[in-house]
Image 1 (cartoon, rainbow, N blue to C red):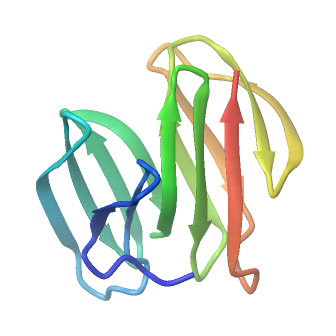
Image 2: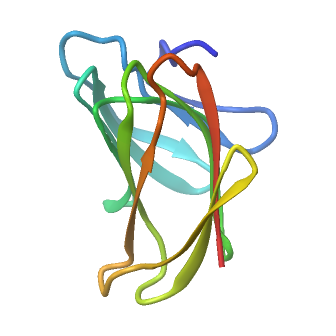
Length: 136
């Protein structure tokens, strides 16, 4: 998997890819239109953050590269790559239970907080890419 050199791009399957965990300096792209929504990404080695229509969608510490990010009413799915293990936070529905699957294996069920955020730790160091699916 490669970093997203253009910082944010639309894929042919309707998903988006974003982030570049190899950047030494912070870079951002604003007002990227996709499927009627406006996206903003900030990314570099220590952090990657995505917003949609001014609302929080995704954040990782340290930075990650994300491919085929898809969100719907049931949750989110994506493939993630990074140099180090990452703490990933996604914005979902408030106070809702979700199952977290990493590389197809359940990591258990978790509840979002009142702000709709759910945090997951993902082992990335020396692994390459990892698929993440978070579903109701």
